[in-house]
Length: 225
Image (spheres, rainbow, N blue to C red):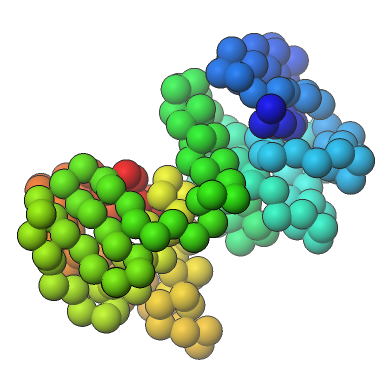
């Protein structure tokens, strides 16, 4: 059974999260502070962590940093802090996703599933991905839309691949730039805007209201299948 560690100091929300996640078939351990959370992670393997930033003993970002020293377990931040700077700080520290309170439980469970898919053994290196009218063939570096091949430039393909390899995961802008353009890049977000616009024109039914290539303003991008 998939094991999830919930780190939340508000007892009512902690209980609601545990009940709902168990209802979806997950095994849940709930703790109320960062020190206990780090001890739990050091003692037992978990498949995913849901972490509040406003903990009574340690700031959640510090918990992420310490957890990342020894673990690659996906971490979803759950926080009332909605400032862009707070989100960037958590993602740069090593968090995989960020959900702002208040939130819908269905959204959170969907984010849980997406992050678990990314780390499951069978999903490590998918050879293809079907997403609506799109078929993405990673081995051939090809994309079809409605059965017709879509011509992509090498840069467009590398950008799409970086997102579609981890469907549902928010990929920070800096990480995308470095994966597609190289380690010397990190602040050239205009590159991403230009190429994402080109990809949407080629792949989305309605580029102004994309279904697959989603922008998280100020943070990065995600591919939704």
